[in-house]
Picture 1 (cartoon, one colour):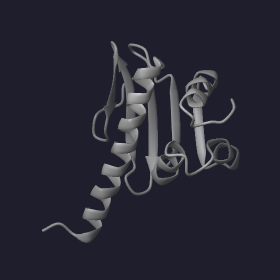
Picture 2 (cartoon, rainbow, N blue to C red; picture 1 turned 180 degrees about the horizontal axis):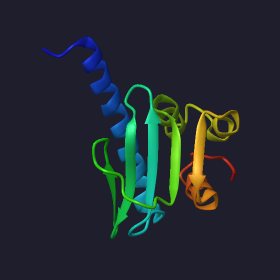
Picture 3 (cartoon, one colour; picture 1 turned 60 degrees about the vertical axis):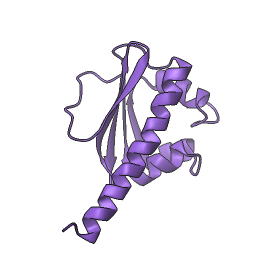
Length: 126
């Protein structure tokens, strides 16, 4: 029998996966994640884990927690899963979260800023 906590965690992981799947579609359509490009997300809290978005030809693949992360991501994003989902869904301001420490970004900030603005995650570049 599955406990209430396990059900809540499964629901949270499903919500994160659904949100990130939407990002993969937007990245693919915008041509922002080319073959071999990777974005690694280290998400904490409910629904957290290491997720990666990886360009594969003309597709973008979402690897969920449990899949080993690929080496050499172009960008690494670290933050609470709920905060990241709220940012992607337009309920929180990414720039504010970044400057307040609720969102950490390592790697190619220009690249991150470019696609985040194009996808509406940021209103203006970092």
